[in-house]
Each structure stands twice: as structure tokens, then as C-alpha cells.
Amino acid sequence: MKRFTSVHDVVAEPGLHALLSEARAYAQDPWRTPELGARKTVGLLFMNPSLRTRMSTHKAATMLGADVIVLNAGSDSWTLETRDGVIMDGTTTEHMKEAAAVMGAYCDVLGLRTFASLTDRDADYAEDVLEKFIAYAGRPVVSLESATRHPLQSFADLITIEQHKTVARPKVVLTWAPHPKALPQAVANSFVEWMRHVDVDLVVAHPKGYELDASFIGDATVTHDQDEALRGAHFVYAKNWSSYAEYGAILSRDMSWTVSAEKMALTDNAKFMHCLPVRRNMIVTDDVLDSPMSIVIPQAANRVVSAQTVLARLLAGAHT
Ligand code: CP
Image 1 (spheres, rainbow, N blue to C red):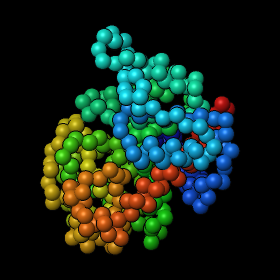
Image 2 (image 1 turned 45 degrees about the vertical axis):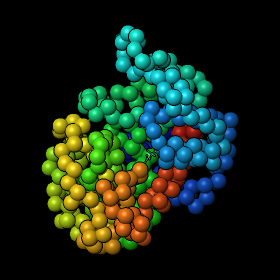
Image 3 (image 1 turned 135 degrees about the vertical axis):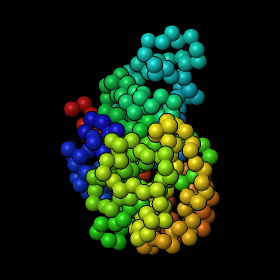
């Protein structure tokens, strides 16, 4: 595997079932391949903040025996320019062309976190920054969340659902929930994309105006009635996203979409999921998040399993 930027980088080769099988093995014994990363370096570049992605990917690389270098662009490295052909007379100090190429010279596998601008939909949905980084770096690259997807999160979500499901084909509900700031569609897009490749009954619930890009939503069931969606659910995945149609706009702060204990009572003893960080009593009430219904901590813990499985593949494919 030469890149991990979406489920599409996995489905043909090695295949989702093979990757899940490797994830189960790493979940059981994280130290099973301590030499895979020996004498190799993983470089992680963050253009946006992170807790889970930063720590889990670092830990995963370490457990594979690799050295890790983490850079926060603009604070402990230079401010990066990503546009082509610009006169760099502003605040950016180094172009992505040189920065990525230099990181590629120092590292065997690279990771990049770059959020959506939420102002230029075409550039965001073309994955302009991530694709440039991959092209300039010349190394296998893992997305640490990009403008339109968060594949390490989605893979961890899938591992978590596999571990906690009580029926062969669970009903999985992705529900929009309110948030005070405009957030990208990346986690929602990516979750839907991954869930469409596995055997679940997927329902996406959101207020009108929050339709996801058709290429992500595909033939998934969509409803504007959250209560109807929640009935009989086995997993409730809450997430805010801003509008795709009115790109980046907040169209609703309707607190009746907050996931509460009353809402969870409509489900079939569902488990509550969220990628974190989560705004308490906006996205989900304390009585859900602090209850056994919530599996957000095991879900976050699976970020290590997800990262280790993917890095193992990328490290094995480096220099071949
Ligand atoms: N879920 C997630 O990616 O968390 P961080 O933004 O803290 O990395």
C-alpha cells in the first residue's frame, strides 16, 4: 500500500477484510511486529490541531519499531504556502513543494493533517493540499484527516463497530448534531464511505440543507426525521458538519438534534459513538456520554489499532 487517504486505497488491495483481520491481530498483540519499522522514520505534519491523531499515530509507529518526527506547521516549523505560482510576500515562509520534498528525504512514510478551508469547495473536494503533499513528498502518505475525509478515524470506527456489535447486520445511524462553529464534512463523508463498504443498515439523519456530497452519500438511506432514524438503532454516531450546498455555512443550531438519553431510549440499546473532541450538551448530553451507552473511549483507543495496521502496510511498502 502506497497511500492511505480513503477507503478506495484499501478495497482492491489489500482489501477491507484483510485489513480488518490485521487490525484484529494488532488489537490482540500490538507488539507482534516490533521490527517492521526498524531503521525507518515516520514523519507527521500537522497543519491543524490534534490530540488523538497525533498521539495514536505516534504510539502506533513506535510500537512498530519506527522513529517518529512530529511537526506542527507554523509553530515548530515554518508557515507553509500551498498555492502555486504566488508571490510569497505575505505571512507564509516556505512552500509545500520544498517542505514535503525535504520531509520525504528524511522520512520513509509521511502523514499529513490538513482541514478543509470551508471557503473554496472545489479546491477542498479536489483534495488540493493533500494531493500536492503526496506528489511533492515522493513517499507513502497516510492522511491524518484531509479536507473531505478522515480515513484513520473511519477505520477505527469500523473496528469499534465490529468489536461491539450484537447482531450480524447492525443498524448504524449517523446523525447530525448542533455545534457553535462551522465544521468540515470530512468525518461524516468518510464514515458514510466506509460504512457503505460493509454489511450494516446505514441511515444518515440531518436537517434540510445538510445533504452530503452525492459521491459520498451514494445510495445510503437519508432522513430529516432523527427520531425515525434512531428507532431500532444499534449504533448512534453523532457528528456536526457544516452545509455542503451552501458551502461552510451553519444553517441550524437546533438543540432538538442533541443526542439525549430520551433520544437513545428510541434505539435498540444502541451504543453512542463520536470521533472526539465533543462539545458536551451541544452534540450529546452528559447523561449519555457518562453512561455505559457511550463507547467513545474504546473508539478513541482503537485509533492506535487503526494507525498501527495502516502504518504496518505503508512501512512494508516503503522503498518497494
Ligand atoms: N478524532 C480526532 O481526529 O481527534 P483529534 O482531532 O484530536 O486528532
